[in-house]
Length: 406
Ligand code: CTP
Image 1 (cartoon, rainbow, N blue to C red):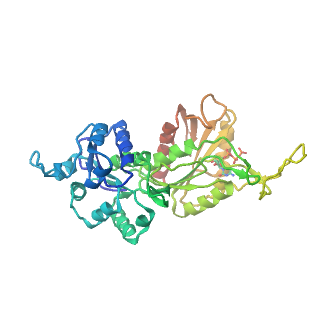
Image 2: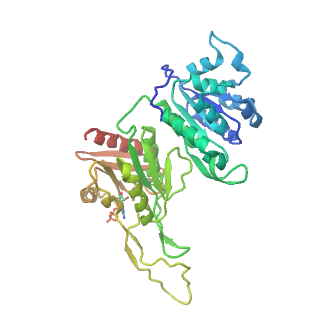
Image 3: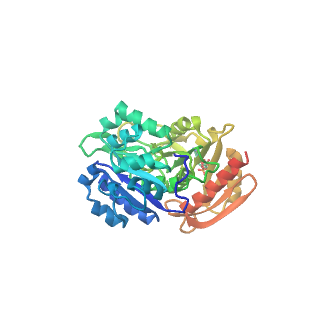
């Protein structure tokens, strides 16, 4: 992420959205709409190649502002040329989709169209969302260019794996508009560095699935929403986030590691913790798993009952204690069992424990809202029923408070 402060200290909400010539331009339309919803004023800058995919009129309509293109580049206004004026007006610049060609120009400092000229003239936080064929994405030239940009403080968003527009499979698909929106929100807050800025935060989420056989598993109803909200909040506060989850999460601007079982989650957490500062164990880890994992499918046959022998899973949280790592545990209890939560905090030796009562009305597992009590070293902070993202704000506040006190 760029450590540069936004250029427009006017509380301005203008974000320059550079669109370049790739099929993913159609997703930029949704991005621009989303940015308007988020309260920003997008100013679209289109390269000539982008205009072959989506007409400027579309962007003008969704952004409610004229589109800047190479035609308008030559019209002086207010004593400034367009690229300087645009660069001075906006607080954040996002290039999405960013083709290999534009990324190469940005890395080399070439300014042969309005967008690349703006990239040179702009002094605030810059985000790029690469989009291209997998072979172009993996080419050493592109890898080097992205590396150069990242070293200069540009936030280089990951790409998604999957089917590409050319029909081939691989990495290079542009991240979702939702992920880019989160990155833009964070860039607007770039000046407000806090204790989480630059820290690596590992968050787990979702319920694990323990295999019984090739088709069946033991699982739970955890939706992963609480962990996801904490991961988003940590990211917004400038942290380097890794989300280890059993749930689909292809719409994040940060690293996601997909896992299924408690064992897989334990291995992924161990790997991610090598350079981490904070661990937030929001996942609902199964306490037991089948002793044997049948390779095939257990047949019903003529049996009336089936006994599955279960053994304890590894306690991921309890195993991760080490000096310097700030650990946050969760305790979802059936009933107002604060005493149990206090005991769990001590047993797991965590810095914070987030307690919630899963039997309370309308909150907890699967819901969009939660009601929590955060047990800190000295305090018990109650957060009455509210959105999971508001709960995440309260949890992140306490993590920051705890880190400050170290
Ligand atoms: N946890 C873990 N590994 C497990 C079980 C739980 O890391 N195998 C973590 C959870 O992610 C949570 C905390 O430990 O942050 C407490 O989980 P919880 O299920 O409430 O407690 P348990 O340790 O399983 O104890 P009990 O079931 O007896 O309440």
